[in-house]
Length: 328
Image (cartoon, rainbow, N blue to C red; front, side, top):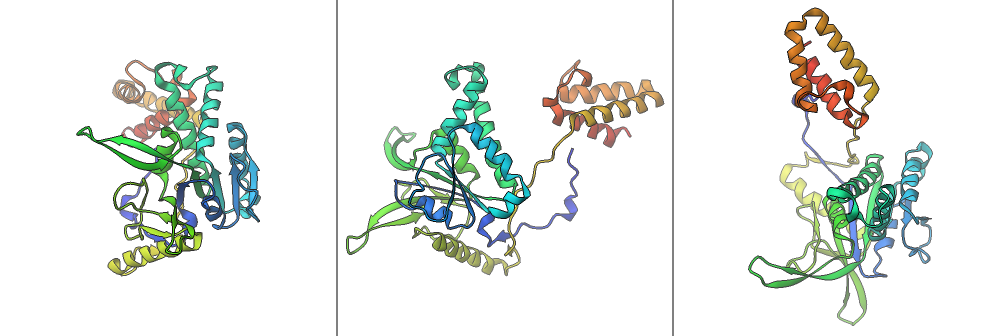
């Protein structure tokens, strides 16, 4: 169990370093989505679709399976790779999600995800996709997610309908991308006063006709479609926030995602056995029922730690921690 010192906690500070954020941009083809992402610097492109032919200087890897994706994530853990690349781009999330679904189907010897009993296929697919994205951010990379757009009809509670522009990405993967993104924008084509076709990045929709949003409270709703404009807009939003807090909650240092603790199942089992032996030797009548109560609470009534599996490592960690905190 993690040990927390709540009294030493410090207030969170908003970072001006955009490489600590997750960005999700969608829009029609050839609107500069991938170009903007590559401008973040030292970008590694997971090319689920081949749309980089006109992008100079990008480092693309053609990805044709979810196995390729997992292999690339393993490469991202290497020190020399971290030194070379700063940004990872998923282009597109749509195809990445489709490959993830095929991967889970193959694992379970089915043709369709819905054929896995009790709806577990959807759960496994969602967990797999989230785990890969989370691992990339935990390794310290900036993450850009790219999708196309579509017009979707929604129904209100009163039965009336309305249209909204949304990502073309399948719902399961789209919701994951939206939930983890700090910056969620739509690349919108428009014509200027001279009739010239241009693109702008919509970060907030005033009439809810576009699905988008941003965690920065004072961000401009619409900006020019470029990485430098995005950096400028975010810094302006941070400056506005800083004015209200005298700058005490703003930093130039990069924000990092907390890295999940790796638990050693075998070591925890050994620790449990040593603790149980120590307590039962001291006073079996007093400690026996207490140990049983703790094990039952986490594994279920009548279950034994010796019958657990590595998949239950977090529960074993909880058992060991509670024994140490309450009985030792």
